[in-house]
Image (cartoon, rainbow, N blue to C red; front, side, top):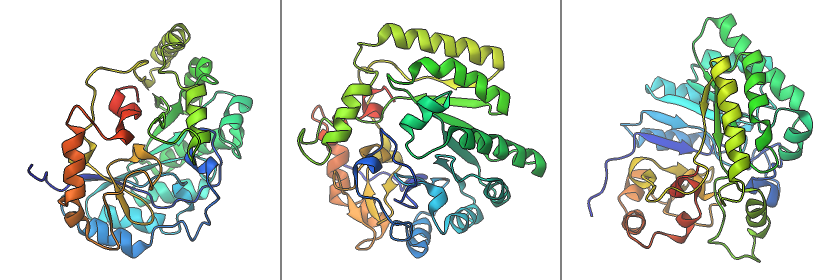
Length: 327
């Protein structure tokens, strides 16, 4: 099996620390991580970028909140200096006016903000520790910072994780975003059902949450269809870009991540993708032991690719929303 070229796109977890305990995130079900202890060392980040001469796109996010990373601005500037497009997803709680202005000035290409509800009660029950009004104000402030700087970047997109508890608010969220100057909404399903984990092990709670809230079971077909149709109509009226996921698994969807990209945790663990959620579930290498190009061409990666293309994919992939076509 031939080794694919080094990836042009990579996702890096710049910190594993987070200021929220979101209901659908693994962070909620693990001990809190200190801001400094969870940060990826800047030297490790630079070494990774330097090992990828063909890098063209870099996503600076993982389980943690990127705005907690001490070297975030330096990382953005370093990658931009190499001609790389850079962006990340944020929970938006720390995106004050000063930070927004700094990010606009840094040349950041895109910034996605999570907003999983159109009112405080729904949103704050999901994003435990966040304040709805603050996140909405911060989104509006980011749009204002772009206008003040006369900048087309960063492109602002809101990301909505669709679940049984919030799916009915999609159309209202579209209208809210239109009022504050956000031009795109991406709706996605929960990322994984964790079916490869022990039902009574360390992933029990998040596995049970996914089973309770996931929309891909087919049981919510009529509700999802109505919510999606209402959102489409609202987006058409507002001129807002809207991306909706497939409501049920797509036959033969598959995945190309291990050939096109990679995910690196704040501790330098190399994984096949960001959807794995948990650096103990599959490990393809460690950057403190080998440079990335050696890991990419190594036997662990090659075995993973071979199995992913077979009728017997890795267990960790079988419950993945991207692999199943529902993300």
